[in-house]
Length: 185
Length: 185
Image 1: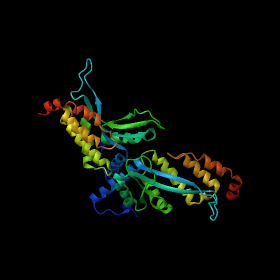
Image 2: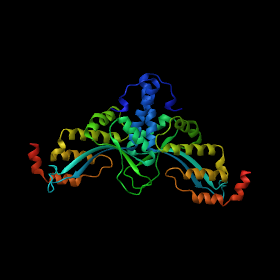
Image 3: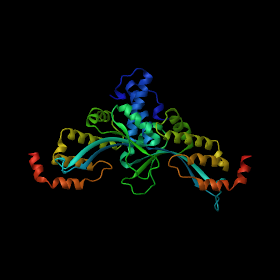
Image 4: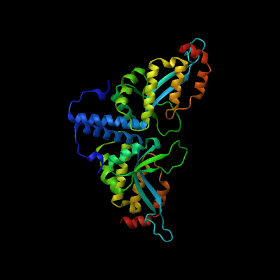
């Protein structure tokens, strides 16, 4: 249970909470990212792969340089879910990067998605959030476990900001049309 | 006079105002930029240049893509100063960029600087803001009109995020040491 759900104990405290709540919305408008990831996971010797051939993940994240890592701690305290990890990118940055990340489906469904449903983002990221929430809902319903469901999800993800086209993945999934028909009927 | 100074008319309205105030802080933590600019302006035929050889400007800005330009309109309404301009960069962007910008010294001194003095940023941009405010104060006191004052300002600006080194400019200014002594005594 995050900070924003606590009861107020005084007017000044309540003011600070509302300002903090607004800060989270504004900061996520600026720096937040809602993303759905796909990793090819076919059958391999000794391990059964995913039926569709792809593993699906979901993440709400906010990235900052080392000098502003305290802002990410604020998000952990505010939401009461997720954590801060060192970013694994190693390109030409001047300082180390850190990432607030909430990836567990239960955390997204119980906390992150309800928060941004009640408190809309002001920027075009709102549309990304809505698509993200729709995908997580479908994943929670198990749709990503069927090829046709996964195609629907991939097609939504393609239209989200900063996400690469999933043409190849969709082509692979469509290449197995007979199985899709088996699963869907 | 910006939105944040109006009197509250009801509890719900007041709540919305505090959330909006927090949103501005968070959005600026993510996307804001406090910058001091220098342009070489020597004497030219028919026009007297600046005594130091450089024109100094100050700007608080927030840049967004076209899809989120409404966020910049929010800043105009909130602060009651500044405006939205099309960004003049023409590199490899997917959408047109727009910039909220407050550049007039009176707007910075009467509105922008007092706001961020009362409501600190949470990220490392706070340090940039403090340096920016110090520079604007010095400029308001006319220090940028002397070579030695301009060197002090340039040296502060060099330590701000995303600002390029001013080695060349400081070298040029230092090259005129006798005049600096004339001005400063």
